[in-house]
Amino acid sequence: MSVISEEGVRGESVFKDISADDEDSQPTEIESMCMNCHQNGTTRLLLTKIPFFKEIIVSSFSCDNCDWANTETQSAGRIQDQGVCYTLKVQCKQDLNREVVKAECATTRIPELDFEIPPFTQKGSLSTVEGLIDRAVAGLEQDQPARKATDPEVANKIDEFIEKLRQLKDVEDEFTVVIEDPSGNSFVENPVAPQKDEALTVSRFDRTVQQDIQLGIRADDDLEREPDSNTVEAMRNEVLVFNTNCPECDAPASTNMKLVQIPHFKEVVIMATNCDSCGHRTNEVKSGGATEELGTKITLHITDPSDMTRDVLKSETCAICIPELEFELGMAVVGGKFTTLEGLLKDIKDLIVAKNPFVTGDSGVTNRLQKLREFGEKLDKIVTGEMTVHFILDDPAGNSYLQNVYAPDPDPEMTVEKYTRSFEQNEDLGLNDMRTEGYQEEK
Image (cartoon, rainbow, N blue to C red; front, side, top):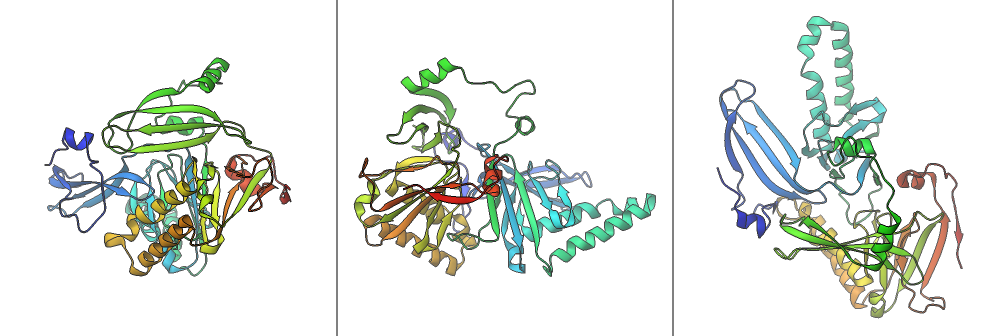
């Protein structure tokens, strides 16, 4: 059995990217009791990274005595600030091969069959859409012999439902798979990245108090309290420092938080974490105000390299679109950021190209890999001024901002539109009382 050393924890991360070329990345083997025959079997543990899912622990048990086997995954990363909901329209058999990471606390639904797998009833898994269906079938079949002996009528109804689940894999009719995860750590693959996936909808939501309690991040008697006005005033006048742990190496680190007033815009909260042990740095921006009455769509025609120095505030609810590249990035994928346009484009390149293990190593598909490399090269050309494009920030909450370098005069290369949110956008923002649609342009 291998041991994780203190140097490994405080220095290089013990969670490795999946790669067929890394011969040193071997699983840890532990002799453990088989829960089926109660003889000794072997448990294998592998600490690895899954894109958009942070770190996970993959465990596999096998018994040579009775041939029983079991696999599961557990999240080793932090619980995200918001929950996530993936809604996938399965339209063809290729959709059954999409990679799916389902956390233990996630709820899985197939609305067409009125079927739901509640949270904490299955272990976390790294599978495919077809694998989710097979696992549901196996769970329903598990106690069928006992049901047929005690209640044949119920057993027959379950057999009929199992057959309906199996027929889904033929994809004769379109059906929907919904994965709702309050921890924010589940994931469904977009096979056409970096383009928008028309069959997949991703939305973020704020957890309820009950969900916080279920995840163990809130005590049963911890009630929501309003912030003290003196505390808010203190935040405006100083940098607040909180002790935390590095999300990469788990070493002790500090997070700095400051309320900042952006000229010609509003107040925002900037949070930055620096790790002295591994050098990891993160920054995150959250709006200091409420959701605006109207959404904001900002369109900038990038014509000169000097545009790269413009300040950008991208909130968590803001989507990014570059029509010339047929590229669209949904809300909360990059997170809230206050940076320059160049910095935001580099973050997008890192997310889509450099830090996407699904298109490298064993997971790499030649055509997809070449496609993403070409996309990264086009982003580089935009940064250097070799390619002119339209850069669009679409924020239904109205909390994003792009610097007007001609202020207070109008910017000839930038337009700002205010629009009334759709019902679906209000649903994503948790605003269910506003149901009108339409745009009105702010000149």
